[in-house]
Image (tube, rainbow, N blue to C red; front, side, top):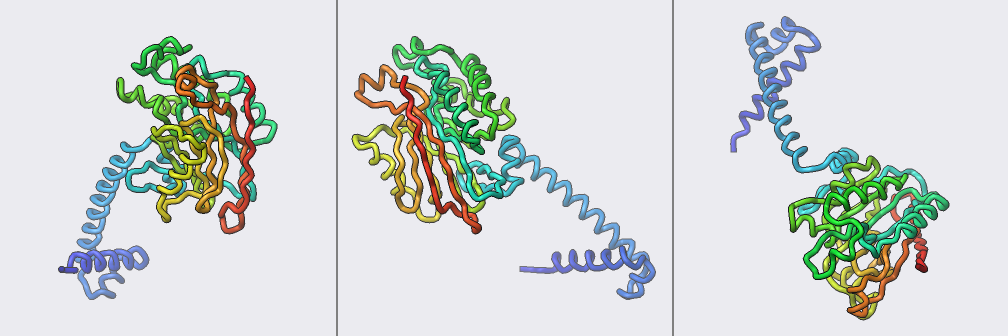
Length: 323
């Protein structure tokens, strides 16, 4: 493989660098060149630089087209891009303890979502001075073809549920990190709409992290949001254990926050703090017909971070709702 082009580029850069300090005459003398040859090197350097800028501009435009503004901001702050995964959000944090509210499955737009529970969560979050809010999906109830589903909705259709979601989640005063769930994706299947992403674009503090999973980096620790489309297990812990087992060593998060099944649980397994989030909604008629329990409530979690940037203590507190 020839290295001549690289050698030529290095030679041009060397000559132009010398020229910027000492001028044409001294450069010609130092490199044993004519002044015209020095000028030719300068012109070639300038031409190469313009072409390089043009290529870089096209490259940046192609990258920009693939990500939202919040995702690009995450990349600029050092968030990772992994194969098959959108940019993770990166939290700028310099303290020793990070407190956040974790909730999931509010199913806004459904008669089984209760505003009083949502506002109770916000009140507790303010009282405890949480640093952020995190949601593991099913932000909206969607609109399926399941018989009778439409009669369970207080807000019918994409536009109404989007408008209602913007109204509710604009009440969150801190950074809000969220993924979508299977109910949100009914709008993708019906008309290609990303309702959670569209809601977040109207909220300056919201960070949409994609479908089903999304990572949040805080110092050297990773918090992962997880939704899924699997079902409940007979034992509440079984689903969580199987998900943890499926994670390979190099991809394991430090904290795993799970939604979808409407069950609450905390466990520490394979050095992962796993929290199943329950639901910010009440038991549906469908869940009752299937004899599935619904754990209504939310979590306030404090993570203590050492000087090396890793979570060393983890204090989750469950706030059950009695509605």
